[in-house]
Length: 367
Ligand SMILES: Nc1ncnc2c1ncn2[C@@H]1O[C@H](COP(=O)(O)OP(=O)(O)O)[C@@H](O)[C@H]1O
Ligand SMILES: [Mg+2]
Image (cartoon, rainbow, N blue to C red; front, side, top):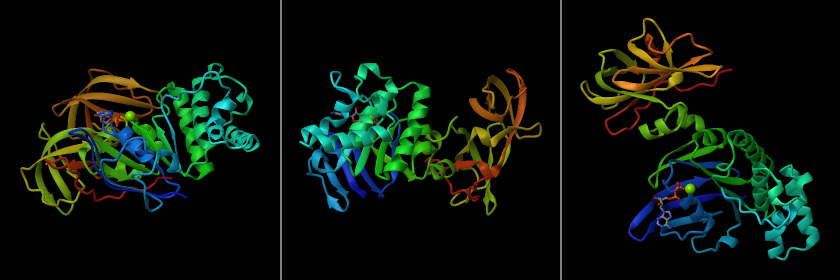
């Protein structure tokens, strides 16, 4: 059992503050993903939790106890790194049991723990191999095994899949999700990949430049991003954003005018919106469709046919990179003129500061 709480946690290297006051609660058994662009402070924050970096300010509590000054070995955590750095001269079994040997755990107990970790990770047949005789995915599983044998209260992962090829990343992602279910332990997982965050997390923490942009479940962030940064970061292909101007604002939503003069009613709470205010309209590629009577006229620049779906890249509304995602194989060709529409209930609106206006429609699960 392990809960964590961070209160105004800060990190500075000399005069440069890289973690700028993080408040966060992590529940027991929760799978929490820190996601954000490279350099935003994910690894630094994780290493502060692990005890590998000093905390400049604020409080880190594990199970209600302040641990800022507790050494890494005494926090009950285990970390898995991107570079798994196995000992090349040791077998899989010896690599996994090494920390236990250092801790002077008797051999019989060590063997039991290593065998159990190998069972969980399906490494049983490889226990006597050296790392050089393993695939990249198997090596990463050994690195995870080294953490499992220590039975930590919290697992910390720092981009553990980055060194794997795409197919193996997908597979290992599923294995880690399964591992979380089997071990029922609190896990904190760092990645720059929003697909990993969306598929694995109970709770996503979106970071930018040392600050939390939003915390929520994957679908909360997808359907109700708090601001334009989160809107652009979560979801693939990314949300289309078009500059617009408020025409009218009322109970049914906010009507906006696009650069071409086309108008759309966006179903969001009008708040302080007034006619003439500059806003940005956000439409996910999957919320747009080809529609001969649609309000937006554009020219197809590029067609990507992926089999199950087609991505149409359009020049329209002052942008040359709008994406319309169409189910199945679209017959639309490059250089074709098209019209598209978007359901106002599925659109997002951001004010001049990039903050989202609350949407009126709550998302619902489909069968
Ligand atoms: N030892 C250090 N000294 C000075 N700056 C550092 C140090 N470690 C990291 N940083 C800076 O802190 C910021 C966050 O780094 P990091 O946590 O590694 O980002 P991420 O893991 O999100 O890519 C970066 O701007 C990085 O340059
Ligand atoms: Mg990092």
